[in-house]
Image (tube, rainbow, N blue to C red; front, side, top):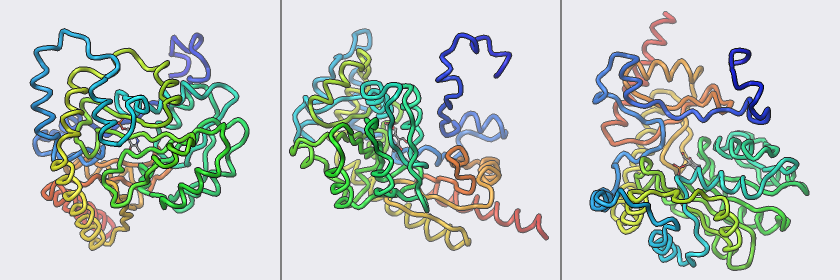
Length: 374
Ligand SMILES: Cc1ncc(COP(=O)(O)O)c(C=O)c1O
């Protein structure tokens, strides 16, 4: 933008070069750009649920449509009560957000300011960086050698001005997860001025997720963030939640937007929570998808990093070029150059048919690349 930007003189310089979140490319945009039929496009770029939403959630949302002239319940009482029942917690220990992204922003807004810092992994989820910048605090990046969390390095980065530590397990986009016992030991060693934030957007996919509740009961300053966007298949209605000490929740309530969750969001999330079969089917499909992609992409000679969330990382010479080529074939994945990973693509698991389309597209890309070398 530079000189032609009429806001340049007036805007806070602290946000002038703040990056703008880049979502996975929408199907309609790719269809237009490449003259493709949207119905033929496969999007495996945003770690969404290939089974779609729970039918119970869809029904609950439909049943609430007649009330759209009313404001929603500003404190989402029923949803928080349902979550409290689900987790064995008190509703006062739960906050809800317009996606878990909003909760990450609320944490930054409540606990950070200029002079303070937040500690986070070099390749970790970009919203930690954005939220820290929005709060005008320092982002302290921890190196992630071989794309893995190094808890000792996290500990070293923490100082007297650290107020938040953000860590996702499994992480996005690296897929790395930390050993639960090691993580609990790490948290027990943290000084009291640090609030530890565990992002468990993909917890439900794990055989052995971390359980922060014993630490919570022991009075530690820990906070867990989760979402309805992944295993519950409700990314489109934007619902996330967090749990932690009631005193932390009370801090977040001070900065939470009034009515941050609409009626469809509150109804849909509550219904989805009551549909464990849909969650189970999603987890099963994901395990099959991970196994298929790992095997088939590996058989093409590609290096694949498989975690336990709903995506894999594929190593290629140029992620941007490969992304463009797959897109021309009607398959959307996520290049990770924006994360400083120019040789990695992130690929979400899809339905068996979508996964086959993806593997075929990679095969064609490899054949074309080999042909152009001959
Ligand atoms: C690790 C992680 N945290 C948080 C989010 C944000 O999810 P949402 O705002 O849809 O709840 C995502 C989404 O991809 C994620 O991967």
